[in-house]
Length: 93
Image (cartoon, rainbow, N blue to C red; front, side):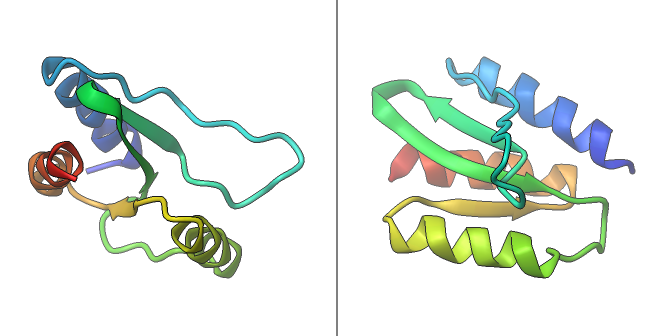
């Protein structure tokens, strides 16, 4: 399973829940998560997508900690099977 396939499934699943999962690009601020998930009722989270078994790079881990310190939810997804549960968690927060 490639990261691109996981990314596509995340976007489709978010759309099916009434939301969107646009690519998150932050020029000049490397290490930010790949996607931002926006679900109905103001539910928001950042998502870093990885190929199965791959880990966050040190800068990505730093950005994760920064975002979490600001009160945002940040998730790492490396398999299609994780998507439903994580989106349900975002929807419920």
